[in-house]
Length: 173
Image: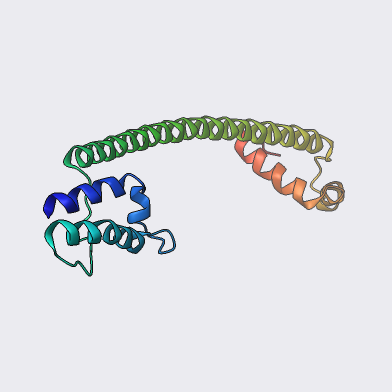
């Protein structure tokens, strides 16, 4: 009886894909159809050869041969290894890009700081020079009205920056 069931099962399995017997999609699963066809093959042969009437046939366990299982697991391990390799390579590249960007950022900030300091120094020197020119034009009398009239023509902002620049250059009047 065992040989009858095994030969019928093997001949019928060749007509189905494994995905038709096991699937996440219930519409694709043809396991009940497979069992029904297996019953149709076994029933007449069992009745004729052994005098046994078979009413129902079911699949207890569905598995791949061990060689196939080992191959599938080996393939899965290799796929994981390849993914891990690419992830590690991606992390290294990302770190390299971050380091390069940080270095460029530092250089750009230093250059911007240098340029800002140069511009500030130049502006302060120009202000001091302008202030020095203006102070030479102010009458040296003790008349504060004349002094205030001369300075009154300058904007207050210029006077403040000139005043700071003069203090830095130690120019007094």
